[in-house]
Length: 425
Image 1: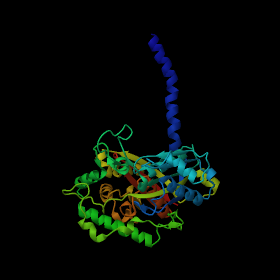
Image 2: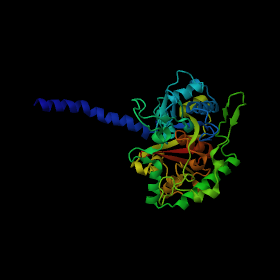
Image 3: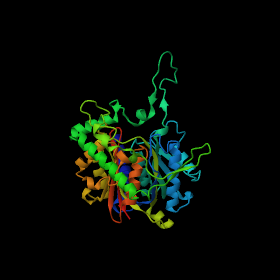
Image 4: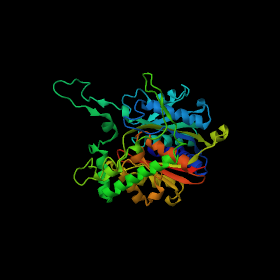
């Protein structure tokens, strides 16, 4: 009797709460009341080679260059920025809170909240997605988001140093490999995952080499045609010891290729019947990228002239060894969220962690190479892992013409991927 009465009272209380909660959470989206999000400015540093032109600059200071330039290009005062999200993967030795450092080094107010995002290679894109969510739900009106990495400055680790070495030789661990490039679940390099994908998807060494060569040619053509001019913010490097400053204004990696050597290079990760080489994989690099995002009301209030609108985005995940093909799962979700079909996309960016990543995802998504990475990709331009996802968004924002749609996707270690859809304005 008592139990029945209690259940009756519970139903009376719960009955109006359930439908009420669902009504308000869903109707806002159904009626289009969620804020629209716009890319008002988008920029990146040049991409430096490993131990190359940007090696003397730590990741937070590269991030500061991108943030400062993005805010200036947006035509707003730094005080207008409500919050900053910056992706950064290899944080050891960078000091506390890399995103905070980048924000303050960019001369934004000390009252600006900051968060560092680590989703491995998808960190930069995920930062933009998280910022977009904050803008959509109205918790912020203006945000900066992006990613940064200085792989040249990642330290080596002494795993047993804290407890004492004791007797004998000890192991030194490369922080890049340990925290950026190793599949911890299978305990091997992510290049082994790429080899697995090449076998499962039937993609040959010759196809990967041909793709890499085309990536290098496209990057060179785009640079010579000044395609990247509007998206790159030059970086001033001070050599010290009385030497004059050096202005780095161009990507460094793509000029280092030697085409004649590509076919004869040995496989890196699998000696017998291996297909992945140093030439058809991406390289280790330094760089940063940032965008200023605004809600529709903030665009109107600030008289901004956006480059693009963010139409939708999504994440997906699968088995860790299959991370190279994870974009094929994330892209359909992002397209669905954007309310568009693959046939509607005018320009695709698929991050070239390895040539086989782009080839496999083109195959699985039914996308042709003439619309994918038309100005080259990470194989030739370089892959600063915390930056790369943001670089793809920056590039789309500048390249899409009014009304055109672009989709960028990037895989990440552990079996994940992120994808985003933009509309040019």
